[in-house]
Length: 275
Ligand SMILES: [Mg+2]
Image (cartoon, rainbow, N blue to C red; front, side):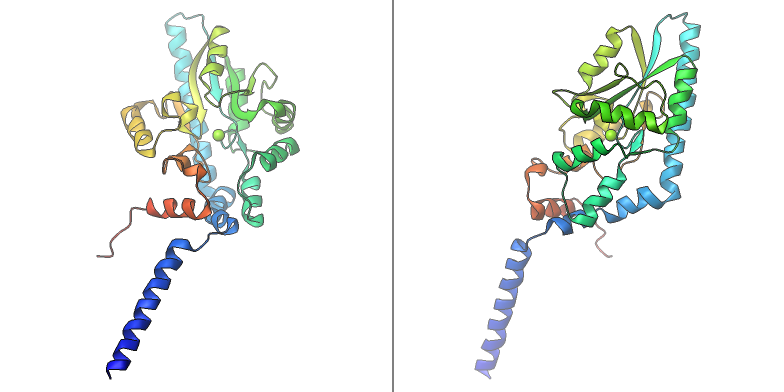
């Protein structure tokens, strides 16, 4: 009896130990990590709700532009009005690249992303082409300010022109040269005599450089403090598949291995306790 009891305890200890070890050290493959994004990519590609939000954003953006335009007229302002839009997941949809990552278990890499940019196969976000035409035909100028690499400027312009975006040229498309902070590129526009009345993007970094590389707590507080600017000066498109918010989950997040990233993602969940 005593021996049996000891055997049970020993088994329990071994089981507990091996479970703990397994929980701590079980590797997470790249395929498993990529697979965590499958529902988000399905939502972008398949749901009517995603399209509805995109149309909603651009409908609001048009109304807001009209407001800024009539305000400028009232003020007798001679300033040229500019609207700064981001590209990826704001005007163009790269979800086919995200879907490729899931299907092939591949994390993001500048090499595969560069190949995707060069293929010029991004699709338009619902409402985006019409919005660019609306601004350019109602007294404004659209500037496409994106953190795509300037080495792929030619292919990006080709992609945008093929889709039918308005006013696309090497003066209006400002890609990344040295820094992903868009402040300097916004200054190029204002130095040309434009007043930037609105910014359209899928990432808080597109609106205000203050939040770049900040935690989600800081980013949320920033949004709370400036909430009246959303839907007026700032127009946000939904992007549940990637963004600075992912890096905002933990300090040094993008340097973590697959298991580390997966752990951070799960630790970030605010869960019901079941009662
Ligand atoms: Mg973007």
